Image (cartoon, rainbow, N blue to C red; front, side, top):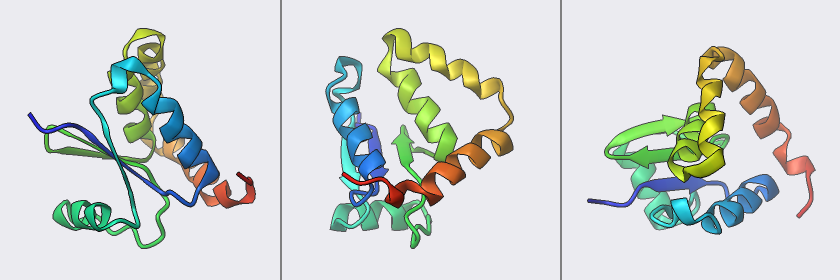
Length: 114
């Protein structure tokens, strides 16, 4: 089975911190982390017909299913196991509302310094 993949913006402090955090979680050791700007990242985005020219969301690919934005975050947490899995309950929040919050954070992510 192919490992699940997280595609992220390596220039974003929040994104990079999150990837570092995820790598330390034992339940997520099977994930592969790929930056947008890499050849592999660009290839994966193209394969899945995703246009991320603005690099505004995280992508999670698991078993040929592609998740983006808040859904990607929740699916990753679900796969983390342990107490992180509890946060999957946020799926009851309508996707437009979850993504509104996600988009706000994504739009302002470069204002945070590393």
